[in-house]
Image 1 (cartoon, rainbow, N blue to C red):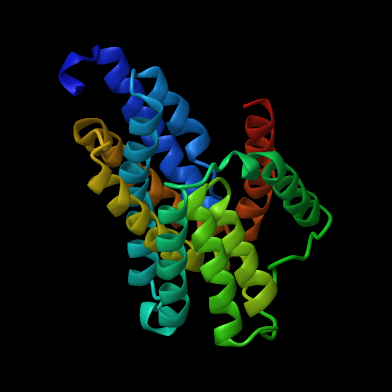
Image 2: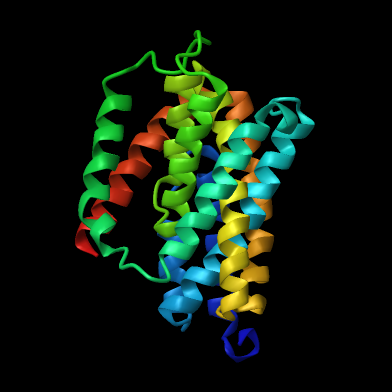
Length: 250
């Protein structure tokens, strides 16, 4: 399919993938950019959703790989949460094949607006490491729920993971964002596997955008470490509002 596209469309997909990778690494919501770009390029809605998971998986892997190399994230310390996300994403990805996800589109914008208002009115959120409010199993249960949401619908998943780490584990916002990428990558891979078996992934387009995703996510991950809450907080608020508006008008 890529061979049938003009150079302008190819360049646009690569650029959008790069920008979306950066945004996703910092605050989530890169799908607001990549989904319209894929549809504009001529993919069907089913192909766009499936291909979006392919290219997005490269972005989340790039970011989490950087965080692991920097010692910000230790996967073995998060195994219960990873298992919870894996199970949840499987449930969500299977459920979407037999249920209509549009009911989530009715209330999800308002949930994202609540998150934006909460972060806006809480200037000290995630600035200091605090005591955990939930046990490992308690947090894993919340990870399972968010993973199921990602497999079933998806917008705002990275933001919800990060907020759960801040509120339940007491993490700083930068540390929470780093750990959220690990869980987001897990749910992305599970969803992608389902779409691959469905035969809807356009590999040439997805791998092209993956090049941009990889570099953009790597840059964004570096900015999370160097700028922390100063960068993450305003972008999180902006992307929550942007996702809300997009879902409401859609």
